[in-house]
Image 1 (cartoon, rainbow, N blue to C red):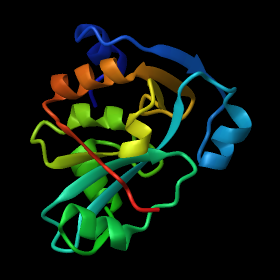
Image 2 (cartoon, rainbow, N blue to C red):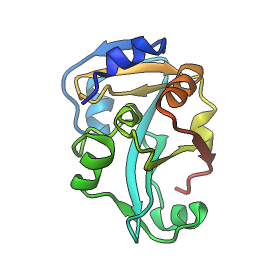
Image 3 (cartoon, rainbow, N blue to C red):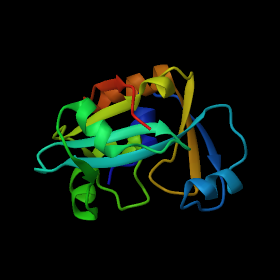
Image 4 (cartoon, one colour):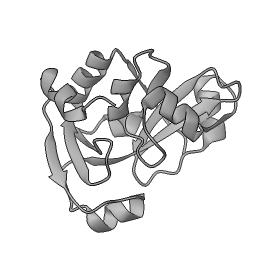
Length: 161
């Protein structure tokens, strides 16, 4: 796995790091991560029914996503969560470690990036650096630089809740 901090530094992507106890759920984040001046995010790794399209979807941390409606929005029908094997193959991480920063492992650009339109309006976001004991704050401008560095484009869509 590529070192996230080295990648960010090498590509001049600014971030602010905050260490905290290990978190495994959004509820843990609410309880254990101090309030930070950036939007909390939830990152979902999804696939279509045929398994030939994969998506990394970012939404506000507390938003519940209607996968059936989202499948219609992205034009591919039924969506479901990608298996641990698919997650490892495409993003190089295990369940519970999904983060937009895992795109550094998607050299084949097999994963489509979708950001909830309302969330994209925020100035900065919280993401974990592929470990659950830190949170990085990254501005929208720096996140765009990260996506360019990984060769990914973001689609902003109204993700149905």
